[in-house]
Amino acid sequence: MKEYDFYIVSTPIGNLKDITLRAIEVLKSVDIIACEDMRVTQKLLNHFNIKTKCISYHKFNEKERVSLFLEILNKGEKIALVSDAGTPLFCDPGAVIVEELKKHKFSVTSLPGANAVATFLSQVPRQDEDFVFIGFLPKSRTQIEEILKRYKATDIIFYDSPNRILNTLEIINECRPESITAIGRELTKIFEEVVIDKTSNVINYFKMNTLKGEIAGAVLRENISNTNADVDEKISVLKAKGFKAKEISIILSSLYKLNKNDIYQKCLN
Image 1 (cartoon, rainbow, N blue to C red):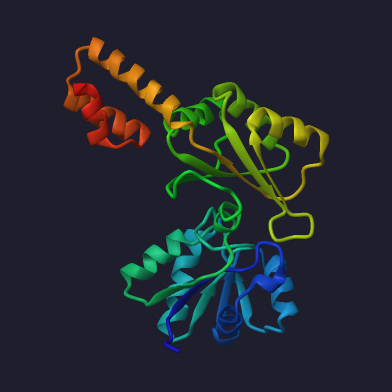
Image 2 (cartoon, rainbow, N blue to C red; image 1 turned 90 degrees about the horizontal axis):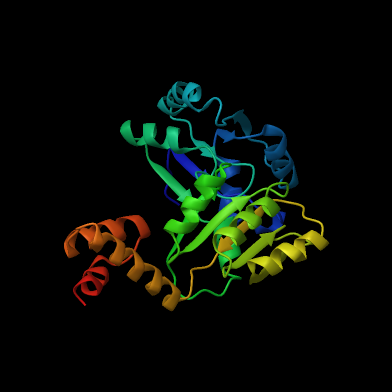
């Protein structure tokens, strides 16, 4: 197996059996494991009898750790990066050190493994493959509404917490009352649950059922006919303001992630 200086290692998002054999091998072979919370990581390491030394690496000390990691790597030692759960750099620290390692020509590789987005989406029937991943939704209602309006023609995938999700669903329902929402919680665990329904029904369901654990959610794209009607209305407004077909196609494709040529043809028709 080819050796690298720095390994990005996915860890289970719930079920410890979801770690790969290669991940265990790498975590045992490296000199240092960089982790978000050493208490969380140590439970995983103990389970698989991994004795490798850990160093904390989280969003509050990312920049401080860069020089230390470079020093370790310059000695010829190997480092593995893990997050508390899932794949590092997906709403988890790692971007700062990876960027620095690339600049200093250290070899970096990523091991495939557990990821909440992929685990969740594989249980959600969708019209098409494309989607936009928001990460954790912003706290501002205005910002959430802006995202919902901007990506009407694309599936929106997001993370949320149990204490926020009902409020988030209420915003979704008010902004896009015909929307279909999918909510996945406790993924890979005993009480795993994925609910897919009209947003108002999802709200009612979770008002009646306890919400625990990290949540992955999706607001599915609107019906094509609804989206077309919405685009037609925006074209009419922009035409009335004096914008040309080419300008309108650039504006709407940029704002709503739609095909520029399709919008241009709509303008001409």
